[in-house]
Image (cartoon, rainbow, N blue to C red; front, side):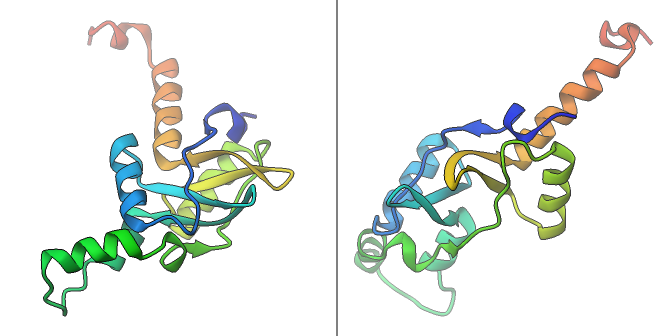
Length: 148
């Protein structure tokens, strides 16, 4: 059975809880990510998602000026809006188990830990890529060549 280690993104980009949410947004935009594991002293302490950051920066009930937005981006720390103690999986977790967990919890991804250390992240995109690979491998040759 295929394991998470076979499809995960190894050594993902991370952020420290004391870094600003502006830095987190910049890292996500630069790498086209929707989540960042939060690491402190070599240990996973949380995860921050694009949704967490949008909630932290966009309150629809407040009207504020550009300087205020810049202040928030530069001075509010990731630790203030991250999810503490996220659910994780191990590299040897089956893809089926990880997919069920992602579906059940409605997460976009799960940090992958080995001996308490972050070694990767498995996301719904990784799972979709794997599904596409499986379906293409099982598609009859005539259909792959455009024949009907």
